[in-house]
Structure formats: structure tokens, C-alpha cells
Length: 189
Image (cartoon, rainbow, N blue to C red; front, side):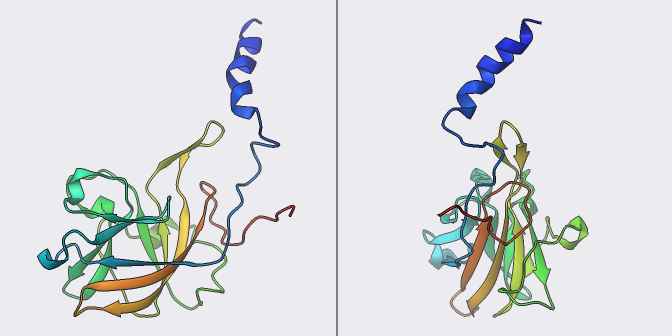
């Protein structure tokens, strides 16, 4: 019987200041742009070649095995430039994945695929100009209620330059773990 009050004392600080900790976090469906440079080109070392979709930021990645705090890297393949999920690199145990989306536009994509077979985790995913993709982030800590999970982002390739080894893209990330929707929650504003 004494465990219940103790449990409340442990959980209460996490709930303090929150109107409802189970409410979805607000986020915007306004796209953000980013650019990456191929990690495979020595002349581009020192420029951002990886992307962390959980924080929405480009990362300078000189050694892919040095850190797993990113989701995809821009790489050169036989088929051209590609997004390579972190788990495709030999010494990284990570779960980000990329899905190629066909038959719908970036704007009309309202939900990430639920079928895990749609996602590629261990191979490069070739990019095409105008192509639409979904990235499932690496596993991250979400909350004391959810534990860990993935965030989902949709993206569209705006400009692909294989000669220069660059890609420019726009993306939208749902900031709520394990929520595949690309429709933001209603706000009270």
C-alpha cells in the first residue's frame, strides 16, 4: 500500500507544469529546407553530410562510425546520390529507415507508411529530383509515458546535383513519437 504514494511522488515532478502530459506536442507542417554534401567526396569534408530529423539539423560527419546521433547521410552510389540510413554503416547499431513514396505529392502525403517492409534500413536509397520520401528516425527517448520510439518526417528533393555532390530538400517532422500523421494537432491559439 505504501508503494502508491511513493510512485505518485516520483511521477508528480514530471507532470508539474504540464496541462496534460499525454497531449500531442505542437508542431508545424510548414516545410523547412536543408542541404547536404556527399560524405564520399574528400573535397567536401567539413561540410554537413548527415541529417538528424529528430532535431531538424544538418551534421558534419567525417567518420560515420564515430556517432549515431543522426539518421541519414548523403552518399555516392552507382545509381547517383543517395540517402544512406545510419544502420547501413557497419559499426552503427541504429534503426533509421527511408521509404520511397510514389503516387502522391509531398503536400498530399498525410501519413507515413505503417508497413515496415516499405522502409529501407541497411542500404542506400537513390534520390531523384522532385522525389518524395519518408524518414523514420533512429530510436529516441520520448517520455516517461511512451518510453522510446521513432519520429517520422516527410521530405521532397528540391535540387539534386550529382556533379557537385549536393542535395537540397524540404522536410516536415512530426515531433510526436510513433505518430505517423503529417497533419498537425489542433492548437488552442
